[in-house]
Image 1 (spheres, one colour):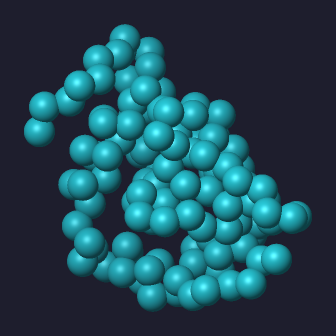
Image 2 (image 1 turned 90 degrees about the horizontal axis):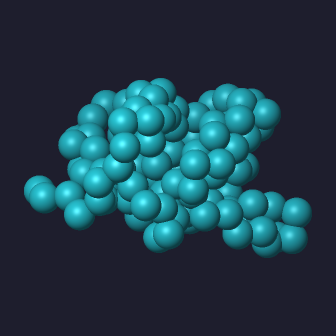
Length: 115
């Protein structure tokens, strides 16, 4: 795959560091397909809301995530405006859909009423 985006070393390194965390990598793999609420991530990753919020904050601060507020809840999806989107998507495509870790997280995906 040929990437359209070219970046400096610092930006590329920052992007790769963010993706090196398994939780953040899996969050991005999930939001590549659809928006998720913070409460869904808490259930799927079986972790605390503050921990999930820290991961989301880091991804959002770099522009990787788009945040949509619906009442008191926040839904996240991959940002179309992120300059390194091609790089991120090419990395996410390397994660096998049948990966046991990814499948364990996906099995916990269930619709929630966050209204």
